[in-house]
Image (cartoon, rainbow, N blue to C red; front, top):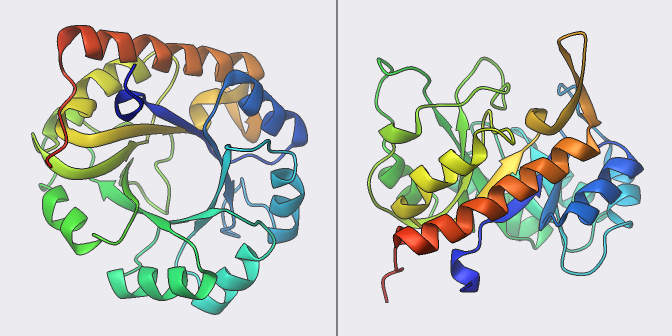
Length: 242
């Protein structure tokens, strides 16, 4: 399969060595560490560095920040060589670019997509243009606080064509990620997916935030891999403009 059409996979919110190892064993392309202190999945930069040292070559660590100071982002990034930055708050394009320069890293920018069919429209084309220096735009559900809260937005409300790399997030699970890819991939240059709560351990109906389930990770990766041949067979993959 053409490498541009392969859906890349990030497992986010990792806090334990065994979960990093499980993500790598399943075939994840990236793993995410949350450096936002108010998150239940928060880890310190030192801890993120310890976990990232377990990664083999070509698996990318990603550091998630929310409205953090550029100097602190640069200091945190020093613990994790080669990490990408992911901005999930109210950061302006200038904020993102300043922090990325200070840390000497590339970045992803999260777009918070309103929930519900009656929600106000979100101009993703303009958002992507405003953050054109981002490596990709990550699509997450707009809920109280920051992060998608395990909620999926209505993928069909996305514009039919966005000339950038997208990362689909928000409420993804092994059960729905294939459909999400089939709906969103034709709308963009390339697509990746990002999962956190959808591969966490459940106990008594409660998700244990930050504690991943290795079997769910493997099922999620398998579901993503099942979507790619369907895209190729149906000719849904959009050819990027020259």
